[in-house]
Amino acid sequence: MKYKPFSLRPREIEFNQRRATAFERKQQREAQALPLFADQIREQQHDWETEKERRQSRDDATLLSWRAQQAKLWRKARAMYFALPAQSRAECKRDWERVFRAAWTPTNLIYLVEKYNGIGAQREAKMAEDRRQMEARIRARLEAQPALM
Image (cartoon, rainbow, N blue to C red; front, side, top):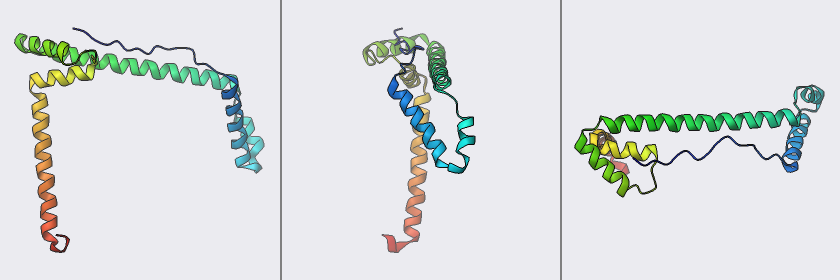
């Protein structure tokens, strides 16, 4: 089974002078927004080094969270795939390699597996029924107000 690995890894953010200057302007705007409390606002603000550490840790945490979510989806997709009967699994694998050339993401695999295990058809039937009910409600409201027709 082919798959596309998650390409992003935690990396060092490039902090340049332009970013530092923008951060200083932001702090000045915050202090100038309330001139009577400018001294207190300045006391609560942190320096550029602390901001760099915060941004780096937030970026790392975001990437790790994305990777964990992607891994969770792959585990779900594989569990669904291996729950299929052997014949369906072979057909699914064939479609995976032919139809989804190089688009081997977990959501695509889940979509494909749901085609073979019937969940996709159930979802489509439910959506069609919901759409039919909504159209019936709209039709009833329009018929109750003949001036709109």
